[in-house]
Image (cartoon, rainbow, N blue to C red; front, side, top):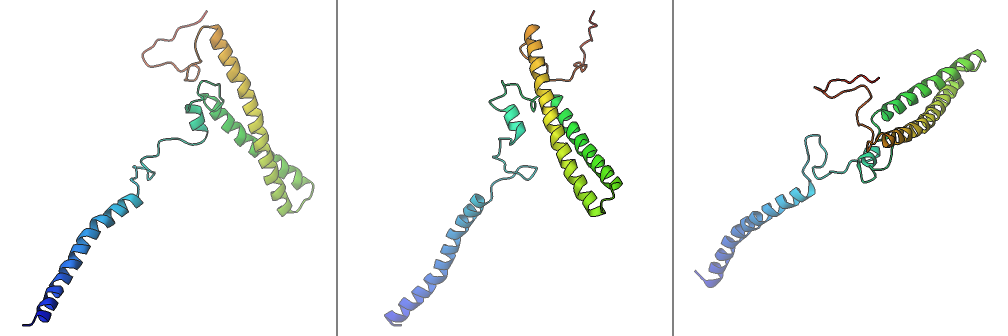
Length: 169
């Protein structure tokens, strides 16, 4: 055997070993890339490192919690939602009724009713938030007068378990 054939056989032996070595090296690298590309997810399908809530709840629970807020009030949120729903329905119904009695075509009745429903929704939202702002401030003033630092976080009439209710004179 000459030196050339020996060198070729040695290089042929190195090629498969080289491919295996490259594949062995690339597998951990691919797995690391995949781990970086896909962040861990929690039970609900969201990102695990996501800890900050967004929107009104973030502002209500955030650093501005010492300021009075309609969104942070225990009863106000439900009342505002209820008022918005009723405002939209009432606006829709009134516009549809008046348009039908005026002899307007059906397509126009629908468009007018939807527009009036949206306007009723916004009007009810604005009014209810304004009313609740005044109520929240009044509750804070009342709590200050009675020496409490802030109003309780539960609705009126709801007593904790095991605490007897006191009757007031």
